[in-house]
Length: 259
Image 1: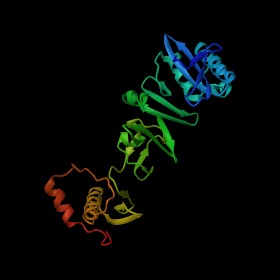
Image 2: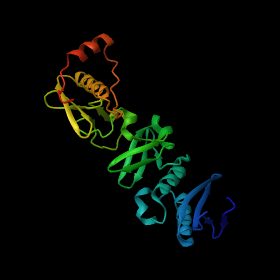
Image 3: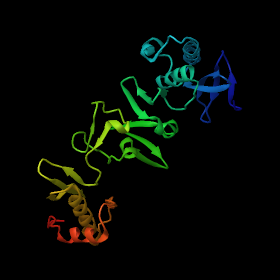
């Protein structure tokens, strides 16, 4: 509690921001750990959140399926408290541990499933949603969820990847089938199309293999750079073939003259 905090009803503190706005902070303590429940515009709402949190911590019969019955508590806080109660682990993000995996509850309708090896990462990185895409903030950049698993930004299910069990939020590695790992490459019925985005998407060409399409994309990037195009195009890192074979494929590939 800092100098601007003043305790009021149980579990609630009045907080005055530097701008003069008065807020009410609610918090609980479990196993010696102080857990913030968030800030509220009134003492009543903050007190309701506190009482709800205590109810959740003390009643093991309450599950996330009952969330509609205790909406005075923020959803992510409910997840954190129920996981602490059931598993005796505290995470700052809405994670619930299972035996061989864990769930990240972004909302009642969006529940991710991850392998335990990803627990440390997602316990310290908050998932957000923007424009239908999910991402985390990492070292000042916004990274798509799929990038951790080898998926390119804005990957399309059925074209670039498949979720074997049909659950598009299940990112366990055994459930992910990655069909395309290259920038600018799209799998078609007949071959692989390479395209590049300048002011809009420009087709580079269609090729027999994904490798050829990826190299064609890199070739298009090289040409555009020589034309003093200032856009920072991502390039494909290719280590499947030797430098000699890469050069042979690179030189023989025909690309769109408009590039």
